[in-house]
Image (cartoon, rainbow, N blue to C red):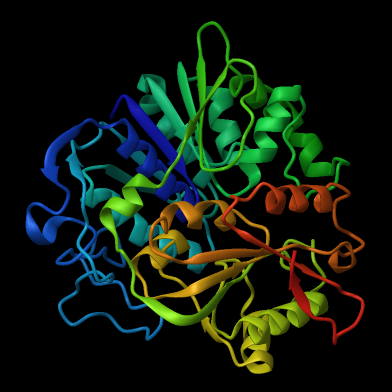
Length: 412
């Protein structure tokens, strides 16, 4: 197959694999949009299709829901910078089951193909026998891979693959803020547990504990294995692990700069769906943020429920947008508000990089302890505070007093 094999389970993971490949490839000196409509960004660039095996189709505009008549990319400026040689890389998409993630992944997969990356769509969760079939089909490429790139070291699927085949070189790319927790846990030699999960092991976790334990050892550097973390987050390098900065150079080269609207946009989060934040507090603060900043659009996280989004649209008047691509690409293509307000999440670290030089201001609204559900992990408050507190210096910090519905949000 290839000397470099990537496993992705989300659109953001695939985006960051493309960023990693771009950072590795030597520049050829030719302009990035040389070749006209074959480049995947900027003026005159064709956009990805809705399915891997289907003809290329334009991506709908994130605001109107319609595609440009000629199928060309958004953004009002050409892509710039040197082209880079096609990477020797195969990406295996371990397809999730939810429709939003699958749709975004198919569009990201076409972008990857446009970059010369081989993409293999694996129905890894496609019913009975899918796991055994996937392991059987991936055995040979895994054995021959010189480097394996993964996006989610907490994934049980990825952990199982790592227990069967230990790569010589391993790279971990961002899949949200979990990279920060992974670096801390692997540095302390702890078992890998997602930050929003409670510490006690359930029956499923107990059954898979041996797999997780072996995978943790495979994710640690040894004399025969190197480990790299490719990240846009403020991560302290664990002993023996190389940390490489993801500056979103591929995104900035291929897309934009965006057209700016006069108002603000809000970025949603799945903290309610993961059981961390109380739904009533969340809805109230979204409404307050919209009124304070004059926001008109709400960019939904792909895991937010339809019921919650309908409630937000009705109660706040915000236009709810289901992005067709990761937000970093949507924002870079534009149009985007001059202010983007988010709750603590990866985007408070990634958007300032993707939108560097555009004049867009990013703000983060910190999570008050009163918003957390009783069932939330004891680590949740500290982790979320760390995500907000380590955001870039140019990111404004907002605080909210959560005691009464009439309280206002203020700059902190």
